[in-house]
Image (tube, rainbow, N blue to C red; front, side):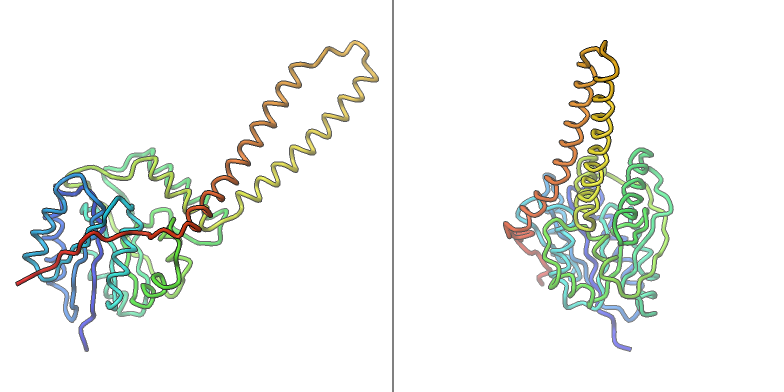
Length: 315
């Protein structure tokens, strides 16, 4: 049986405290694989620490390692896309974070599932030792909402730690040109035979999470805009509902005008209704604005990422 060509893609941002430990654990796992020809691609999203310098040393000493340094801060999803675009000669690609919360020891099981015929092997977090309960609640709420308003089935605890076949990678690289990508949804949309593998995420061995609440919100917004137009339809239903409500209030007001001559001026009612309808209008306009903003980002046609340099092993 010929060896499987495997590429590990790891997006990196300010991980100088753990990146060497991650590489050591990863290469130990890769060395244990049989009939697998593996390499590692680190995609460095312009860092503010010494991560790139550390990875230069790693790449210069390990022929299996390659570093792609991006010219600016393009984000986690675009870092993954850059890594996939650079690995289209592989039969199998595994994406995983470099903070050691995605255990490299799970890779053999993922490879075995690929050999069984699965073209996408996603992972499901059973638990995270140091997760913030509030962040977990927000994540579960987002995936519940997305499942209700879109046709894309996704597990609330699914991670970006996943295996894809070379065929899926080529489809993503050639057929999907979005700039605001939500990869978890895209891989679910692509289809093919998929299977989930459960794991327990450990505490970070160093550094801190780079996903702030604002970045989580941006990712959630990209996911909703990418896979559902129901928020726009919701605006229509809200408008129709409140129009009916206003019509009923109008009839009631006219009747009171003729039946009750001592009717007070009604300034309170007018102010309340004015504020209510103005608020609803602003909410609906805000939803429309999000979609228009998404269209604006796409039609500009700017590159999704720019590579500054590539560092690889030299004898």
